[in-house]
Length: 268
Image (cartoon, rainbow, N blue to C red):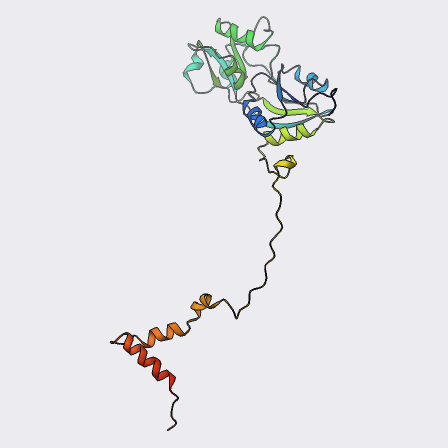
């Protein structure tokens, strides 16, 4: 590396609601010499940031234009409705879009849900952002349907939320420029997919790989020498002496038995 070259780094974009903490921690443990920089970006601006080189990869919300961007879907979020704590919805565990028919349902300009038909009654004006819409919910103007992570992000003590079982869902994905699948992008893909350091598809530094030791040469064992102690299972002499010497007189009987075995037998 010459003095004019910048040290390697990895820039990771993420949209509101996504918490990349776990993956960043694993990156820092595995690649401590390559700093990871987080870049917060709105859902609408995320793809332009990736195309313009402002980040190496990013957590985005689907759909993704696959013409020039690659993407790996990661998870699907539960959709919830944000309401004041004294709202009738707060008394139940979950609702449907039909249950919101009599409510003004706010639809911010940065909404990440793809609706075929908006539930409830439309507001007189669309809030600019989800944060603005949450403020209007707190003021009693209407209710707001969002991915659960955004409801948590904009949590207030005077508001609560409940799942909406038939609402569209938001899916989160890891995306990057299709022609910029670098080694560092591959490393991060491995982390997100839960690969271990020693995974065959992971890129492990050479210094971290254990060196294979050559197998030690061993000479074949000879059956005739040094194997006496291993042949007890064949029931040799010691076993025979034990059976013959087991009379009432113990050791004396065993000795006599041994002497008789030493004499040749006479033919009659």
